[in-house]
Amino acid sequence: MHDPIFSSKPFLNDDFNEQTFQCSVLEEICVEMLKEGYVEGFENFFYLTHEKSGNKFIEKPVLPDVPAEKQKALEDLDEDGFSKRRLYTHNELNTICNIWKSVEYAKENKDYESIYKGFKELGSKFESMGDYENALKHHEKAFEYSNLTGLPEHKVEAHLLVGSAKQNIDAIRSFETARRLCQTYRVLELEYESCKRVVDARILKAKKMCHENKCKEAITHYMETINIIQESCPNDNSMMYNVHYNLGNAFHANKEYEQAIASYESYLQHSRDLNDVAAAGQAHASIASCFEALGNREVAIEHLEGFCKLAETQNDMQSMIEAYRHLGEMFNSQSLNYYRKYYDTVMSNSPTINEANIARCQLGIAKSQDIVLATGSPQNLRNLLTFKLIE
Image 1 (tube, rainbow, N blue to C red):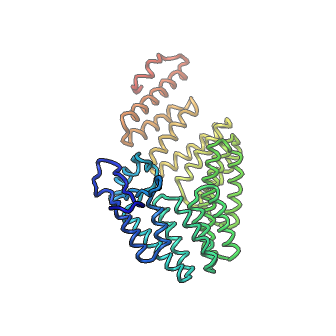
Image 2 (spheres, rainbow, N blue to C red):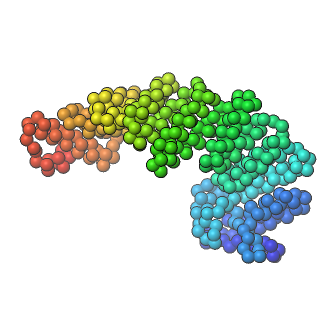
Image 3 (spheres, rainbow, N blue to C red):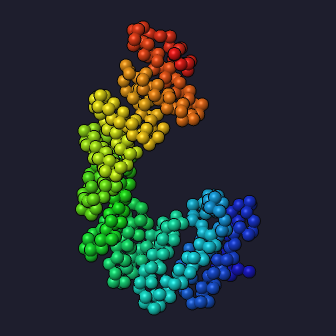
């Protein structure tokens, strides 16, 4: 018989038998922690695994140690308010319990470095399980004790961990503080990692701004990010070219095409320096889009043809298909040649029936259009819908 403070949670789904949710294991672990004298660990574990209902605490279900797809199925169930609440497996709970014990033992012995490492491990464990609220809570605890270890690298690491757990605007602040600490204490081996975290977080924020039609704010954010890279990692082309590409996208979305071209050209240069052929092709395609928007089709075509050549060297059929199709659409008098290449590329790439039909249709339209331009007389439009190739 359970003590009144405990109450076993009803099963979430009839498809799972009594062995699926071993609710009594929670009570056993809690009692064992009290017997061993880990009062703080017991309290933490109890509130993690129980839900208050009236004057009772109800055990949350314990997921069995089964494949991830079954765990996901259980977590998605919508019953008794547990549909959006993170549930844990038996093994996960045992791991968490043991770390809490080690932290409490370290506290008794004033072993600040072990306390710091324990909270850091707990935060990372929760983060790996997708429980960011508890991850943040324990990383912040680790941050508190990082000040007591006397090691600057712990303070830097703690800022990075807190930023990672927050996953929002505060993440940028934490990562940037870590970067500044690296510069202050000359922790050079961590400055690159700190800078990278700042850059990734800023790119994520700026992309969100663009999605919310705040392109000018995003552009400012990207420009500040470039300054950060130049300050901490001036020779890192991989970070720089990523920012230039996204900055170009922001300028493009804001219809500032000349500035977008400048950013994409920087992206193209960094891509060449890194020998990243796929990125160079992407740069050509983006530059072509800007010149097309400016009405300069001649230069746009040059860049699209450059994109095609690079795609061919990588055997990137999908990019080749898109490039040839775009070239065919861009101008009328030469569309037949590009649509023929488009058709040949599609048909050589094991297309689906739908893809093959679209290619036939596009080529048929291009051929009919070519005849119209050559003869000056319109053709029967029904011929454009037959999907037949005009020899």
